Length: 410
Image 1 (spheres, rainbow, N blue to C red):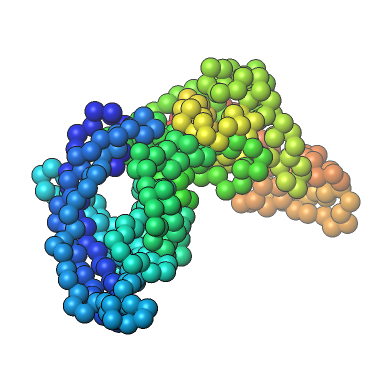
Image 2: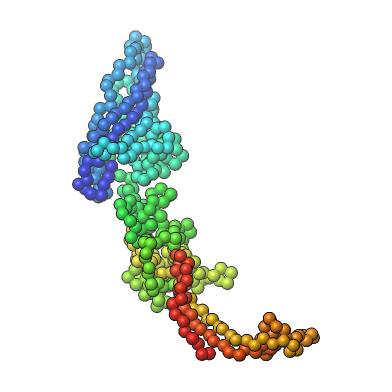
């Protein structure tokens, strides 16, 4: 058990359910089903800036005697035994109020089992050690194909160790130091609402030891980013942010201002990475951002190159992601209204045509040049008024509203 606070209180107790099978030289065997209801974790250690709570010793069960286990009258004497099975069926964690807060394995009928290699002729101690590599995905049993992706077992998943050193039983060491030492691995179980979109990057990923990945440390990591998820969420129902920057801009100074003091690399470097990616597009494959997450997951140059710096990089993403857009919210519309006199019976011929046309009511008659431009309006335009209209589109509701109308004289 670990906690960030070095003065963390005792988490409670463990309940263990185990099995043991011993076979003697005379063929006698005994299987023990052990249910240890309370293992108090009163011992304290430190590891990776946190507190380790554990039990140094606890009683498993009463002594059990196996009748006729050995025969000293033979030559050689039958005086050995073998531990055929030592199996952990279930481990349950209870808090100080007696409530069960965790148990494993959830995926299988037992956690792990081991057996002795060889035989013993006297008292012997046997050791095993198991360490969770991913504290949030520790519910697998050893018969799960992915077991060793989440657990490290010493000496292995099948053999008992004959010495404490062989089992690497120093409980004060935690493999990988939780999440902080793994690539893209800063994970947070937050007891509160998300304040910044970049906090989505602290959510545990389906990949062991990784959180959702919102940025790319190298070109090799540009594929498979989770950053697109930021484009479908917002942090509050009434949140309105004006003055967003369209990330598809090709203006270097705008990009530099956007990334200033908001990236782990210089604003110039980040702006150049965006511009280079846009300019690398072709007619068949134009490079245009259609999702705000693309900016961070598709371009590795706007972030640092250290995969273990996940928290700092996500904080940098949070400073920028809510300031950008890849969709226009304001549109300028030119509306034209005309008063037209509808005439009939007037003959006319378009350039290049043999047949003469005749103007008729309820249709707009126009004489065209060979290139399709207007040569003459047969139905004359009596008056015309143009308006320039600025329309705002709400990106979430898709509703439109008119912001401004301006009459044009041209």
